[in-house]
Length: 235
Ligand code: 6PG
Image 1: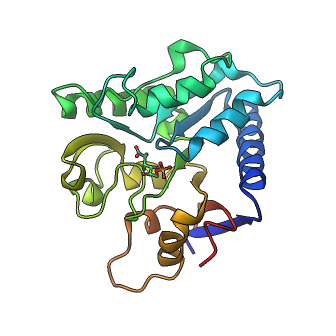
Image 2: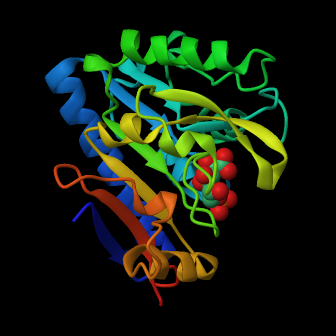
């Protein structure tokens, strides 16, 4: 099975688990490789997780955490839709090393060049060119990162990062690809609240032949951990 359900009664318990899992994997990676390579997710779900991380009193070598993003909108970092800007709002005061934080420059006109540069950074800054954890959310249409249904990024197998035009949003995105996500040492999908219940049901009980993008993350070797509260897994 390429996924596991980590079910918690309440949102608070789910977020507490997600936070302690981050800290545990950080210590492990820093001990083993001297670096903890993370790709942060966007949207609104991660906000409470990032707040909990910001509040964590754990002593950790934050300066050797390399921060990447799982996807980004084609906006400047100070735009309200920026996933980078959202994360920095919550995590900005943690003692990360700014030289090890890499924003996806999804707003650049040459989006493909920006994606290729981001891919080069992953190879240069992540041990073995792999993330220790990739964080993801899931949209109500079953997208994850910016791997939206019926978009060209879904079939990419020879890139870790691509620009992806999303017709449903009439906008460009930049996103990690399935090969990049599925070679991570840990894959975490955080899905909270009743609005996620129908799509979580569909992911865990697929009806059609065509699997949703969020059902394609995770492998037998590294199952995607779906961290859900009861509300999100209610169906
Ligand atoms: C994005 C996100 C996206 C998100 C889902 C869920 O840039 O929009 O990366 O994949 O995780 O859309 O979004 P919510 O957490 O806001 O429900």
